[in-house]
Image (cartoon, rainbow, N blue to C red):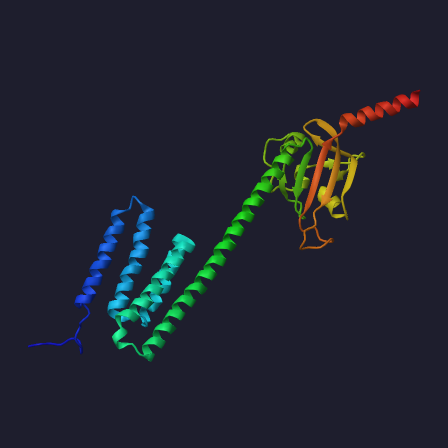
Length: 289
């Protein structure tokens, strides 16, 4: 007894399909055997696929078919790997295929065939140019972004080198008083080897005035409309007390305006103990004289 499972005959594996299946198989083996030469492997894989698809278009489907969209994929892949040269070669293959299709069908050419082929060519080339233009714009945008990031890293490195080479202590902290950056001189002045990043500025830099009253750095900074300097403060560490000069500058960003310190504050500390001692001795000597 015979059972027909499908209501139609399957004729997929025709002689033509087997030939092209064999061509794609040979193309695949060729790219595998050239794994040690990646550039040549890409050339064979991309342009070999275009040649096989050109033959399939000429011998099977014709230029004006729904498979013409595959040209777009091939052009994009050519541009992605070989940039403009690959795109021009792929477009040349498309035009050659378009012309050969007319030559092979010259005996049956008519207005409808001419119209369909021209429309298909314009659609394929137009869509390819559009996709390549969008891809090129994206690549240029990514390249500019990468260049900008590289310049920013370079400038940041120069700035950090400059700050670390300064003898004065430089500490930056946000509007909540959390330390963000500091230079090597800060650790020397504060007499610590531990990292102070992400700690509170008042916890790390404990200042007092002449009367011994505690001075909050963050509260003092919040009261400043612009940069200010004080040289009447003292810093205590271990059993020693030093007199320091404190300069605090609010950092106004371009997005926040002049009344908002979105960038936090920059504080410069300098040990002026010896300077003030010499100054006091000089004044004392002058008064005695």
